[in-house]
Length: 460
Image (cartoon, rainbow, N blue to C red; front, side, top):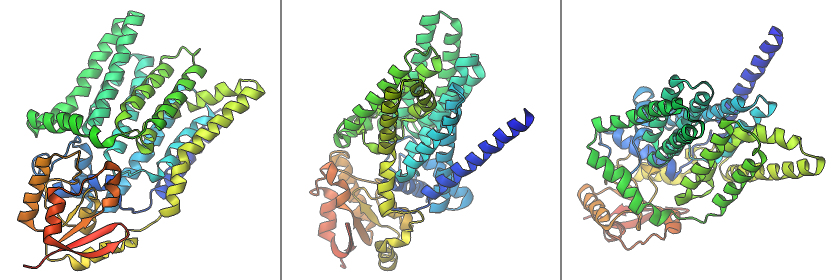
């Protein structure tokens, strides 16, 4: 028996090593991505002594920006250090999925879900608040599932703290996750008439809110309220709408999983179905492939149970469901294969010729303007953003904000402006705005690399 357990542990360690190496390989490229660029550019501004929410306008909670800032403080400001940190986060997300699935059932299929997660993540911008937020949500859910079994206040505290930290990285999803878990405990309280669920809920809520209150030590409550709550509610939805096709597909898949497991009485299973539905509905403002796939980890956790259930069907139904399952997995990982066609592993920043042009021809000023939504260039060229805005998109940012950005451009006069309009066509971007008009009036075209246009300041 001891020998068998040692072999089992060795197999698990080998699997974990393979999983980490696969994660590192799939994320070994250095690609310019605006979603990663947002995190990098804000962290770069903070690294250069700018104050978040005061010198830098942002409507996302500060966790990701300060995480990268402190990584750079310790290891130096490099893309490699930020990427390695994010690879480790992705790896432990996958490991967390495995640990949750093993708390549902011990199955050889529990190794499958983390691999699907990692492969599907290959095209994701992983230096990003979405990824860090999901990491804390997965592990908060892990301790919450332990809580359902042992009714331990220790697990309620751990789950609460991790939920609170998740809010510090992405407030909308973190708050929805917090509300969903708390409401689940309320349901158990009324269903089972056990006071323990109320006590655990109070522990969970208190320790969830505790990390969030730390924000008040650095920023005024009114500033946080306006930036993190009011602005995204009234502005983000104007540009972020996409068709609900993908959302509907995964809602149907979740309901199918619910139907297959309907006879199972485990609270842990019902919690995962409940969480999955809540997370999917929370993605409605921007239900594209990336924003859906990062939140379907509850389905991954249920995968071993679903496979075991399908195995018990007769030949026809089992083959039918397995075919549907294979098609779903293929649908999930297909974007990664498309991505590798253009950005294979170890793709280098050196492939971007316009970066060399900027370094060679925009040396006179410490400032560079990059827009409308192309913030990666600030960190990649080690230039400073002349405005408080990492990105500016019409229908999202206000006319007043565009006017303010123009005033900063007039004051700081960056030597070069980098424009990528192709990225914002889907947002119905209007080029007739104070910032673009300023560039047209004061800069001349100098260089083009695919969709990248570089303008240089006119000489007086």
